[in-house]
Length: 116
Image 1 (spheres, rainbow, N blue to C red):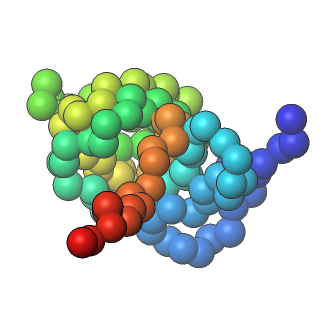
Image 2: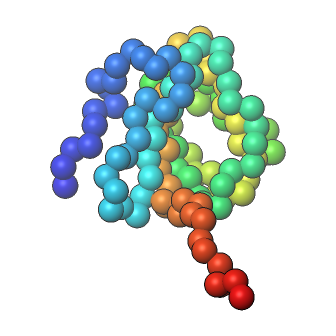
């Protein structure tokens, strides 16, 4: 398997958001490296229809779920079951985490039956 990226060698920009994503078109998994600057957050929301594994690459902060808050630090791995509430808050050193989940089918417009 080819090496896709090195999470320790990412550019400084963008400061927030997806820093890296899998680009290979023929795949069954999706993965993104998400970056939050110090003190920034992703509000709690209901996750998609896929289980998501997260791995904290650097920094720290908090994972907010309906069960409460879990402190995050580099090296932590968490499983977020599909359709569960989650949010993230970066600590004083920011937060970078890798997500891995089954690839979701993109929404496509399909033509209906011919009109008569």
